[in-house]
Image 1 (cartoon, rainbow, N blue to C red):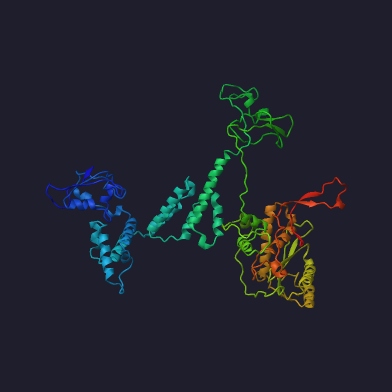
Image 2 (cartoon, rainbow, N blue to C red; image 1 turned 90 degrees about the horizontal axis):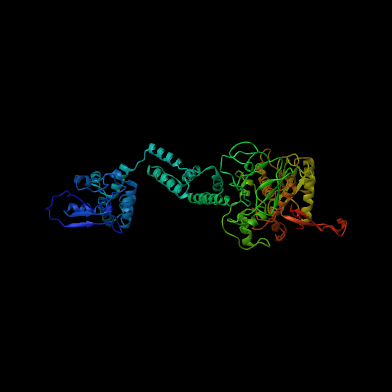
Amino acid sequence: MYRIPYGKKSFPDKRSLIYLQHGILASSADWVLPGPRKGFAYILADFGYDVLMSNVRGTRYSRKHTYLDPERHSLEFWHFSWHEIDYNSWKLRIFRFLQFKRCKDVVMRPKSGTDNESWDDRDIQAINYIYSAISNKQLEYISELNSAYEIIQKFDEMYLKKSTALQIVCRHNLETVKLSNYSDTSLYFDDFEKAVNELKQAGAAVTEQEKLNYMLKSLPQNYSHIGDLIDVLPMKERTVEYLKSKIKLKSMEEKSNNVSNDKSNVFQAEAKSSSDKNYTCFGCGKPGHLKRDCRSGSNRGRGRGGFSAFRGRGRGQNNFRNFHRGRGNFQNTNHERLYKMRSYINEEKSQAYMCKNNMTLKEKLHRTLGHINFNNLEKMCKNEVLDGLPKEIESEYLKCATCIENKMHNLPFHNNRRRAEDILEIVHTDLNGPHQTTGYEGEKYFLTFIDDYSKLTKVYCIQTKTEVFDCLVQYVNEIQNLTGKMIKELRCDNGKEYINSRVFQFAKEKGIIIKPCPPYVHELNGTAERYNRSLMDMGRCLLSEAKIHQRFWPEIIKAAAYLKNRTLTNTIEQKTPYEIFFKQKPSVKNLRKYGSKVFVRIPEEKRRSKWDKKAEIGILLGYTDTG
């Protein structure tokens, strides 16, 4: 218990006793802190009351008022250094208090000509509250100021630190906050926010993007993929809170993997190593171990009871034969390249681990349809564009790592060319190649014809550029036979496969207008160029997922075009290219994940006997026009 000495005034010895004790709403230290209703103990002492206080241990705001000692000079208790209190914290508290008293507006702006008398009343009230929350020393600086707004502006000039040197120090402190130095992400987030607040208090304006960049720079190398996820988001969704959620998720995954690694061993080696160092090995002659534990010679690989997994040592390739009888160690036999392992399951910690596919329906359809855009997939399900699609799928925002790896691109080139208003009014064409990997039938190029209105595409895989003319003739005749319409305008690049006498003569006979783009300005042929890039992006995804040889790229390109003709693209109508062109809704009931295992029926004519198998196992490489 402590007693406040005599105050500034002299009173007789007979004074009333007031006892202030630690309570539920406030500690006894609250009675002596500057602030609204905080200096109550000193006010009582000023008016002659004998003030006793208990549980006063000092506060973190003051170095001098660590305790109350009656032997000290009384003025020491009245002197409270303003610099020992964080001005920003004081300002926040006083603003909240003024807001509670409904007079905060008078400190936010000066008085204007439209303000009435109630403004003056609130201004006087705010000044009184500010006076009660400061010391006499600060009162000297504002004694001649007549409004609460001027008082706050004066304090801002005095105590807000806006020096460039301090901002540099604060930015350096912020850059030293690294996630690798913390075992708990919560502590890392707390220190990061604390460093950001210190930078703001130094007068720097820290935007959300700048704060996001600082946090990304503080991440270790194994968190670098999070930056890629941030880059694909719209600007409005690139927030620090989103980044924090990804950091927490990655941290939880790492902790989970560390725990599961200790439990992921199926077999466990059992051997006892001698702790007696006086033995001498009869195999190698070295002291400290027995022959059965010797690491050289025929016993190499034994005596590793403390290890649950280790590399096999020996000559050539190490194959294993599993014997289920008994319990024992990893042993070698007399046969080269062949070992036997008498394995057992640890009885004390026998657990079974299974892998579960947590793929959502949305992700499954995305992969089945050739890694289609998620927005287009949602529109297709909502508008029932295809038969066999569900009406509703998960609405959560997904990111496909395969798409990010294989579809990264630059910003598009803008041009002012008009769009078609009907099918076959404008057809775009482009030749892609040569490809380094030759197709299984010698293909090195693929040629595309894209209808501008419907975006329906026809793909031809060819061996040389001289085949472009034959493909053009075939495409024009097929389209004319199917629709009864003729192509009006053909847009292409300036390649010699298009700019030659044979193509011009054929176009003249059919009445087709050829519009090539200028040399080296492929962007003006952007529709075909962009479509070919989309085919390659989808093809890389299919190739990566199916894990087949690159020589099958012609079938992959054709499959990608087949899928794109049956999915939404950037068309005028909200329909698939197939439906716009043929006036018939396509079905996806026959589609399967690319690269799936299939069984191909062997015709009876190719079976030599009735005992031959009727089907062979194959891989799904594409689709025909009949499905």
